[in-house]
Image (cartoon, rainbow, N blue to C red; front, top):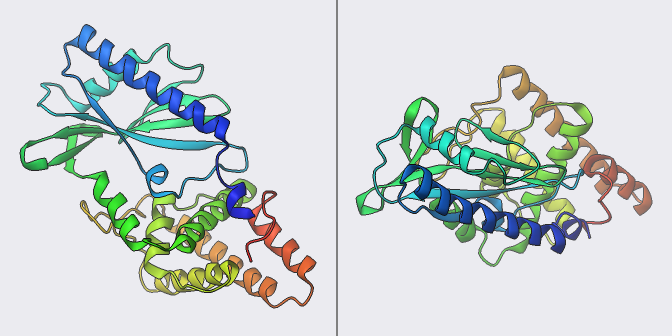
Length: 281
């Protein structure tokens, strides 16, 4: 089954866990020893916690792990990032990148781990750090809880999210076109999901609803704090390219659904979803 083929292998899962443990251990020891930091806490977040993680066609995946400090640090966001990078200098054969809202630790030809930084204030206020030393209220657990609530007892909804992410990965790779993030596809799928006894019909019906929404509004608002538009990174040309890609998906999807010959139908699906595709009926 296609859904099963999208899952990371047990071996890769074990490597992810080992890498995560190593990061925690080094940061706890080195940040305290080198810069007198309070001991940070860590929480896995993102697609791993909602069951929507996939490995792409290159057998690559990513993991999100928040770093939390429960007392004020008299440091800028940039300084904290720099200290964390220094603490992980010998952790991997890949590189450690400083991105706008996280630190990315790359494990060559395998996976990467993104680590956003949070300051936790009294009354459970979580502040997410970003470049220019901005700290914005954001609690990743609220999004995880939102997805889990919306997808409660609905395995098909989770599968449809994974199909969209796999299609986007395939299209991005084959066409060299920027696509919306997995976060965006998760929100869209939850909001526009149409159930069906068959996954292939549900997938295309949901895609049709998403396209209808995009014709009137190019906004995908986070359903929880901070309520920002997570589509802002795509410019006008990239938006147009994505709409055309979605139209193509819907057109070919309906073509596959109306084939009398199952082999021809599967060939169409495989052209859109990639080599791991077998069957989603």
